[in-house]
Length: 456
Ligand SMILES: [Zn+2]
Ligand SMILES: [Zn+2]
Ligand SMILES: [Zn+2]
Image (cartoon, rainbow, N blue to C red):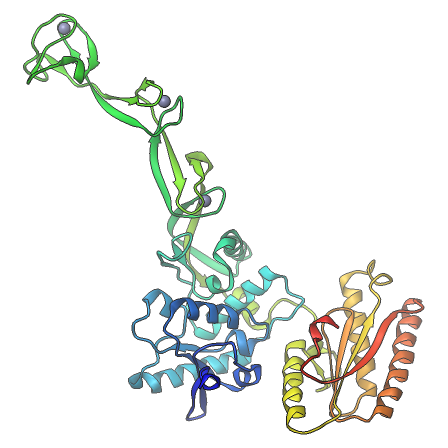
């Protein structure tokens, strides 16, 4: 029963394929890649949040921008707003149209790649989300969120404890003109943890105790005595402790000029108290002037922001090798899907498929600037692509590491390829940069489940 648990059904509406999912654990990248939209069938909000975070944390647009619907009508509106809406029987047609429209726009935007910093990726992904959904970025109040507000998409990329990063991204996006903000609220946040749940209370200016009682003062006009009301109270009468006269009429005999605070801890009496804010999350007692005041805004994507959503930052992507639209040079995320696919294939049939790893030494390259290093990576990819077969593929996992997928290949061909790559990569980099012994290793491994490609 368990293996059927993660996918309850797969339905095709028109040309839209909806993948119904209960949990992500067993979900194959390939299934997710092929589906036009996902319907999360889970009912536990924690589980749904974790799934959103996982999918949107991915690094390929067909994953991180995937239309996501939920199916449980009982979910909190705040959570539903983090998705593309509720899928019900009556809304199937509308959801399909929505999914198709989002899909068309996803095709227009350029995927992020692993040259992006975390903040750049979060910003571009969010702009792409807004662009593909044709919406503004409108935060909504949420008791669940650390700062009391949730931002669609962006909040599912960034953990609550990293909320300063989220606020920085929005601030920067407005400064750079990608977003235009309209102030809707200000929040005061704990200086230590950026929590927005604060308990404000008065404390003694001398000993900081909160055990204060407010005491009314009475001013007797006739003798000018001022003292706490309790000093005047005798039974149900007010008698002046200084001159023993009875006080009858407020405004004629006496008035109440103010209150003072009496500290039960140290006995200090004062008209002033110190307001402090205790953080419900971490317990820090904040002086008011140390609270972090942050603006909460509705944001509209500007024309400039739309350009960024579509084109992304100009970062090198192995897919964009100039002058050579070689189908065998792939972005790592796409290559990885091909690799997963090959893994499944070899389980069905006994195939001699191999994975090749070529790594350059870091030390001789470390002093070069980023542009030069990207050029070296690009040239290396091109060189490798000259010597592989039409069915093979190659990717750059990082600036130094190249991975090859070689389906159904003979051992003697691997040996030849090894020698050719060794010679030509060395020649390429040796000629251009004058570096001898640039290759750290070239190795080939049979494709198999036990292979950990992240560690190559
Ligand atoms: Zn005190
Ligand atoms: Zn008096
Ligand atoms: Zn705190």
